[in-house]
Length: 286
Image (cartoon, rainbow, N blue to C red; front, side):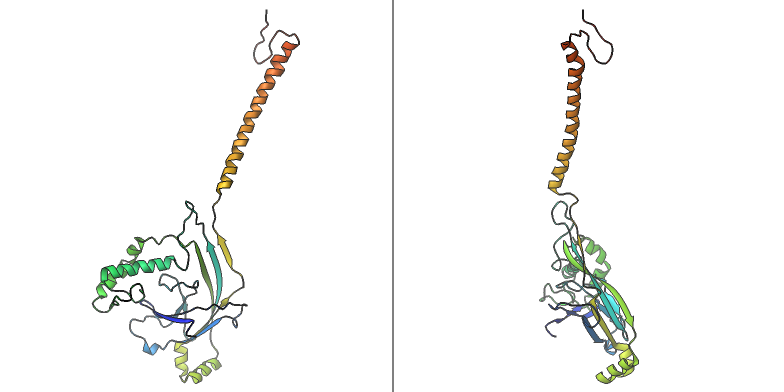
């Protein structure tokens, strides 16, 4: 378990645990996914912890949790079932049609915004936030001490700071999970079992215990591919077709003119007719 669970502190949300594994889901159903039991221990919370619940993210493997990603909130005293739907994006990479940058998980817009905000704090407050791992030798910011004013100013200016960074383009390749959430109440028997097994009261279980079950809703995923509306070879073919069309019309006109000259002017002279045929008046030769 210690090889797949890793802990990381996020200043705005508290301690975050991430789970990664190379194992693959073989089938759908609540018995074949990942199930997590959590004891919140709210009696140990401090004033800076505003939420009596847990936030959950499902991210592409290798991605880091970011406060800029929308989480799934879970409630204590509930059984939460999360059905996942995977969508894979592949965007056009070739210039000048490309409107993307890099690939996930090395680059994501959320990570880019986090790095931008962390860099602002390092340069202006001369310390690093708890989620900043860029320079471990730099001291951590004291958000309730000498660095409180500077870090608070950074939070207030976060939109302007991120706006000055190049984080507008999405990655050229990324995987995004959508959630479908179901919540049910545990049975009284289950509450008594958790209380006796962990040597706590029923009130503690209802107030602090929660479980979350993850699995895919179906063993399929969506793949969205962005490509150019017309390739270079298709462009040449279109130009060639248009040129052929207009040149064809020009050749028809030439043949019509040639037919007029031969049929209405030259042939009558060969048969001894001295007047010319054509549009307008006829002129007789003397």
